Image (cartoon, rainbow, N blue to C red; front, side, top):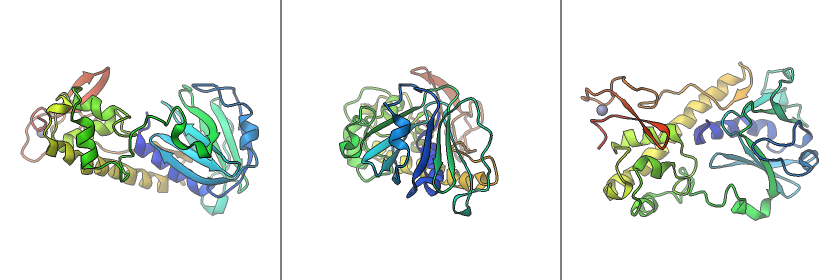
Length: 283
Ligand SMILES: [Zn+2]
């Protein structure tokens, strides 16, 4: 499932093809994905200029000159493909339509953006831009981990009374936006905090240390995604999934990479999802 760095990579890949350009034609091939599409979605998108392509948590937000914002969520398996040759940046011709191409934007510049989602856990909606973050999917999301509101004082306060394990506390989208299983495991490893330790029993300075670590883990991944963007123009135009190496995630049984540590990475299941950690380094 895409997490914040993957979604940010998709946004950055879409921006040169979409930002500032008119959607010449929006084609909507089915009535719904995870939820029904808003009424007349194709008409409300066609002929509208994309003023800005933003990201909030794992949502891509396209502000249109009609006063509406299009919300796009990739869900579990959603993919965005860019084809065509706008500004000479994309070398791909349009591929043949595929079965799960649910929404297709033909931009005035010749680019085609295809939203393909075999499992259909993705979503699209339209809402008045002035309503800001009162959309039901956005209203209770916590601060952006790379934004100014996410700082040491905030995180210490947010976690100080929580009895939930650190892993669950950081996965809570009300605490911080966009963190998922992979990057929570990585951040806890770098901070040396044990994933099952109750949040309120972790010392404040250790909680505070997580703020720069979370930013660093995400920034590293976004940088890796940026490299994949440079490569994708020679590949198939698909955005968002890139090879990235992790210190603990997916490394059960492999040696811990911390200097001097001879332990192997362990996997446990918390709330039905795998947690990877080092039993020696993380306390
Ligand atoms: Zn270790």
